[in-house]
Length: 316
Ligand code: NAD
Image (cartoon, rainbow, N blue to C red):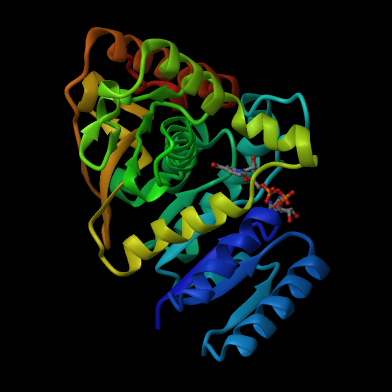
């Protein structure tokens, strides 16, 4: 029986659990530091699968040992942004949380694939890689999957076409330095650069960058529905060895000219985790944008980690 542990049973963690269960992907262990909250969430989810008649278990826990035997461990524990905050400001509170969880993963789940959701997701993917000591293929961040879905939605609205006909790609960073890859975005096979003016693209870029903050401004807390379903898609790609291409945060080892740096890039996701990083050909402008993203992520990492753990980070 496949088993997935989700550490952090807050708004996002429980959404992820919900989609894993509804799609009958795995039994779920839900771990949180708040014992009542995690038990309450697990009970509600247990009744949800009963309602649907799906034979899946949800086990609540405050003990990291209960993640033993998991095929995938998702980390969504930590502090989310409040109105006016940047994701990078979360590094101070979330780096230690993710580091400690990852130490437990390496102890109790040495064979698992690890997916980081907690923000700042790119920097924390690096910290998770260091803390677990796993090979880079088994540690990935949710990366720019959410930003790519947002770009897809904004392009569809702008062009007045169905969202199902649009594919869009965001790379680099899950934050202000994200790189909207218009040259690799399509409507039914037609490149969107043939359909959008440069003013349109600038407007779309601005809109996509601001959507996370806009959700927080409107309802007081950050996005849950889209990351919930997106992370479950990533989990499914691993459990079912789907070999789907998603833009995840990967630790680069020479790809795009970087080594030992976490960056959101398109990658083939399967049972072994990140099975292949896809290296797209970039223009000079795209390369410069990607470099800005990489620099920003490295600055964030260096704020959180002692210098000896940053020693092998190398910018292009
Ligand atoms: P939340 O406050 O609702 O939930 C966080 C949970 O983590 C809480 O239940 C808390 O008790 C728990 N927690 C804290 N420290 C813990 C520890 N050491 N061990 C176990 N559990 C612990 O927050 P949320 O809205 O679910 O967001 C969670 C994280 O996900 C945030 O950092 C947020 O920024 C991030 N996020 C990322 C993306 C993305 O695209 N990468 C999207 C949305 C949210």
